[in-house]
Length: 224
Image 1 (cartoon, one colour):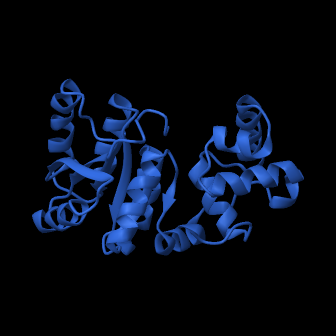
Image 2 (cartoon, one colour):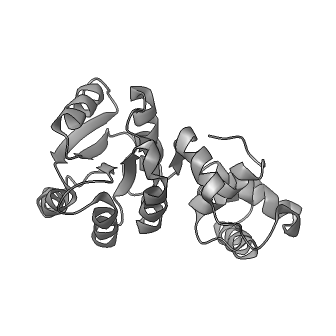
């Protein structure tokens, strides 16, 4: 993630929401930004999926899709899974209401790189888009708090980690890639990847996002 686009170019964003007024509001805000541009929109997951081949043919695949989770025909979770399978370079940020935390869990498992509440401020939307384009995880603070409470208790505890592994976990929780971790700790990227794998295994977790949530809950890092 994060190395598939030219960082000097605007981040290409595709909007997926079954409410036209939501899409219109997001587009109006994004149009005011120099570093992000909207390349298309769709009213449900199936329409978004149908649009991808023509965008790919024109070399205009979005860098980031802002994806509503609850939609007719094809919901955001199924659409996220299908898009990540066919177009792995495209990052997805899920849009959710506060009451849909469990759906967010499923969206993350389907490949979403982060999530926002639907009533997020405009600058939070921009922050999430930029983070996803860099290959980083973006966790809405309010939803993160709810998710950390519902996170299944892992097998391990922080005390089972070595000091270096705790260091690695904190960097993962801050959204750092394996390359970022390698640079920060002056180790090889392969070594960083191995450390991350060991941390996940020790804690009984399956993804970097789960690790980030766990680190927040355990107080190893502040809430995003």
